[in-house]
Length: 343
Image 1 (spheres, helix red, strand yellow):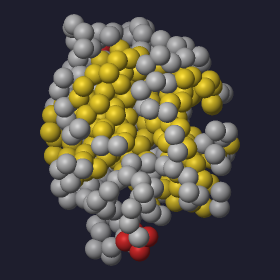
Image 2 (cartoon, rainbow, N blue to C red):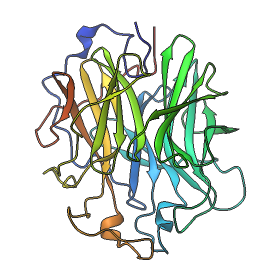
Image 3 (cartoon, rainbow, N blue to C red):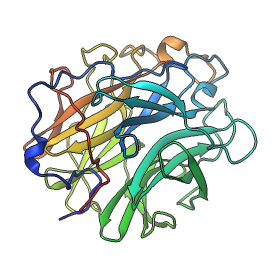
Image 4 (cartoon, rainbow, N blue to C red):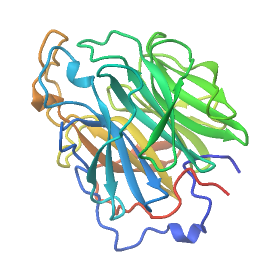
């Protein structure tokens, strides 16, 4: 059987039937109560507390400043759910991530559980730039409880401008990391590891137009990759997690009708539980479709900076993934072992 963090292998499939009492998914699912800029979500089961955690980039949407300074100076925010994902309590930000002087930028956490340890790979930008310049590195941390993290250093990848890690185990002793390389046309690159610490660059995986936020998961006997093209999310399919074929249509491209969901979806995380695949993504609810976007010289208003996190259900129609976010669906994150536990 293929290895994947997205498969719950430790319980009988009969347990995966969605209970009739599951309520519809709330919309929005979460808003950051401090800076109102929650983005780049990842959802994981906390084995110590026995509840679900949501970690995300805490953009500073309600803080005015020059250019895109509000997208920098970010911490990693944390939400916790005690009711199977329907409501989320803000816990604050992950402490102790800083390893050098000054105020710096943390983006897009990826969390891996393996042999009793959580591994986090987080994008890092020194300082608080007002534009999109400067180096980007991938940092590696380890934790026993999802809260206290120990820094294990930067990774050496394909350039000094890499962000948005996604990690999957694609073989018994083979982990693969996919990430965006901004120095190489903003294409998706990959690196491989046997121990989650030392990584060897495998090269370009997806080319074409620039994109970001690759997220890989195994579902319905195939590997899938979702990428953010700033025009909805591209969907790719693979038999082996190595060679990818893109489906014709992006998902979450057309604006939805739920509260805070009337725009394209961005940078997603997917959690598979049996036959269900939940997609967690963020929106900019104030960015009216067709309206001109602010330039680097503008101070973008709070109304278009703020974000919301949403959840929807993926469906498989023939060989394509679809996402009907406007249709009500029963939603419940099943408690217990999460997508990194394997037999």
